[in-house]
Amino acid sequence: MESLLYLSVRDVASLDLPMREVIATVETVFREKGEGRLEMPPKPGIHPAPDAFIHAMPAYLSALRAAGMKWVSGYPGNPKQGLPYISGLLVLNDAGTGLPICVMDATWITAKRTGAATAVAAKYLARSESEVLGVLGCGVQGRSHLEALAEAFSLRRLVAYDPDREALHRYAAQARERFALEVIEAQTPRQAVSGCDLVITAGPILRTPHATIRADWLDEGAFAGAVDFDSYWHADAFEQIDVFCCDDRPQLEYYRSLGYFRSIPTVDADLGELVAGSATGRRTRSERTMACLLGLAAEDVAVGTLVHARATAAGIGTRLPL
Image (cartoon, rainbow, N blue to C red):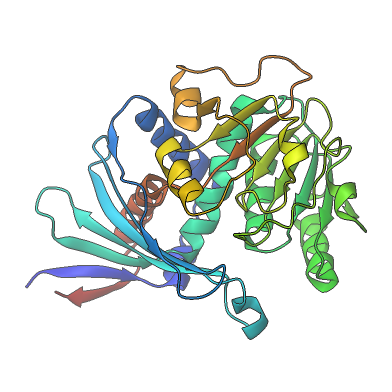
C-alpha cells in the first residue's frame, strides 16, 4: 500500500536545519528562477476576515525534482487568542508519478525561508560591512530575520521596536543571550530606523498601511526589507528608495490589483535577476535600497524537500496510508 510521511511542527523543528543551509537553498531557488527553470504561478487566495488570508502556493523546481504546494493562512488577530499569526501545511508530490509523498507543518519552514530570502536580498543590496540592524515587529519574523542576518553579516548592534512592550522585552532578552549583541529597546519606531544599516519591518500585513516610516528616517546607504508588504512605509519614504527589488513581478502586480502597494517605487529588479546576474543591485554606497519580498512557493517547496530528505534519513515522522 502506498503511504506518505507526515511531519508535525515538532518533527520539522527537531531536525534543526542550520540557517546557513536554508539561506543557501533559497539562493539556489532564486538562481533557478532568474535562469527560467522553475514553474510557479502567482498564488491565489481567499480572504475570510479583514486583513486575513488563506493562500495556495504551488511550485515545481526541475533542478531539485521538487513539486508541491503550501496552503498557508495569516490572521492578524490570532496572537490575541494565543494562536500563531501564520500557519499552514506543505504537501510534496513525487514529480514522476504525482503521488503525494509528504505532508508537513509549514510554520517552521515559512519562518526560516522568509528570513533567509531577505538575507539573500541583502547580500546584493546592502553594504557588506553593515553591522547595525533595526527590527520593527518582534514576533516570529523578527526572530527569523535576526537569525538570518546575523548569519549573513557581522552584526554588532540590534535596535528593536514593537508596540507590545512585553514582546519587545522578551525579544531583546533572547537576542542578547543568543547573539551576544548590544541590544537597544527603541521607544519610538524612528529609533529602529535612523542610524541603522539594515532595517526590517515585520508587522502584520495590512490592506490599509499605517505608513509610520516617513521620508529621511532611512539613512542614505541603508537597506530595508519590507516583510509586511508596504504596511510600515509612507509614500514619501518610498520616494527616496534608489533601488527597489521584489521577488516576483507577476505576484506583486496581482497584489497591486487587490489594493496593496499603491505607493511603491518602480521595480528595478526581481531577486532572481540579481542572483542570476542579469540585473544590478547596489551601485553606490549612498543608495537607499529595499527588498519587498512577498514569499514564493518555490522557497517552501525547496526547503520542504530538504526537510523531507533529512527526516527520511533520520527516521523522523509518521507514515500514513494513502
